[in-house]
Length: 73
Image 1 (cartoon, rainbow, N blue to C red):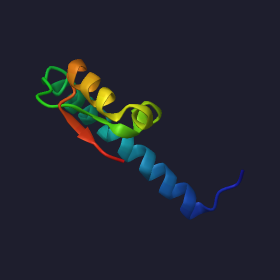
Image 2 (image 1 turned 45 degrees about the vertical axis):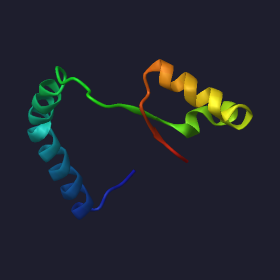
Image 3 (image 1 turned 30 degrees about the vertical axis):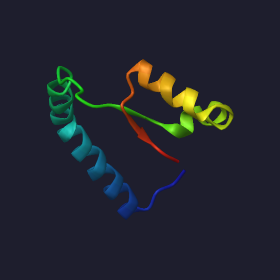
Image 4 (image 1 turned 30 degrees about the horizontal axis):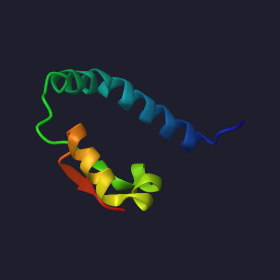
């Protein structure tokens, strides 16, 4: 694989920038680890097959599992 000079410089500078910013990304990820989710939901696409058979039963069971928000597909 051969690179032209400009491509090599562009790739090298992108690599250097990403290595310089990597410690900052880790800091932001660790801060959000202890955050509690207040709301969570489910996409109905994940239960598409069961939803076609008994829609009310599936929605009722999802609410029993704790899903209060849904996203239709």
